[in-house]
Length: 222
Image (cartoon, rainbow, N blue to C red; front, top):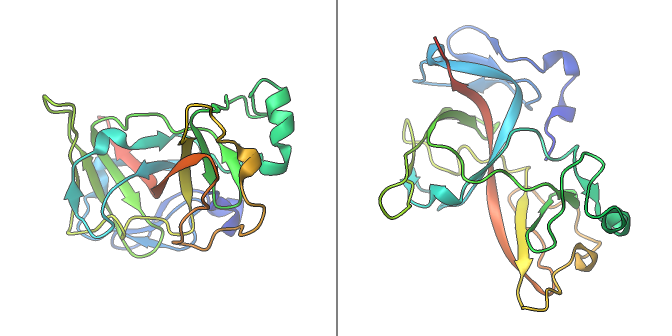
């Protein structure tokens, strides 16, 4: 999931250039944020990442209570599949000190086992991008009486517009009670996963593919 290796480290800060031009730290190309009042946001030095579910063509929807947040890039903190035996031997504690959960584990596009995001994504406003053409404001509404949270993107942006296609992410949970769902069963070929393609099916597992949004700004506090 790491996009920061695509540019030199000196460009890992977001800079304002001209009219609403951002050069995002660790992002692949300049980002144009049209119709966004950037003065209302604190630009993050290091991007964060949102795991999202929804219709790629939608501009709003329900179900944001099932969205999560990685406050740190989980890619560099991941564990290679061929090191899974060592991860098990360490009691599931990864070198980066996150805890592997055999009943709910995540995989990224290079075949790295990664830590879970934090659920749920708190209600509020987020400046998000897919590192292509669109940067806009994502609003997560508070839970309603039934526990549902709505999400909305400004400027008629779609979920696809702010999805980073190169970041692939899937959640794997046991398909049966005997829990035969294991990273040891992940196919060894097909990595890295093609941008925009589905993550691999793993025998014994239910799989849920998540879109990954790059979070580049949070509301400014005054």
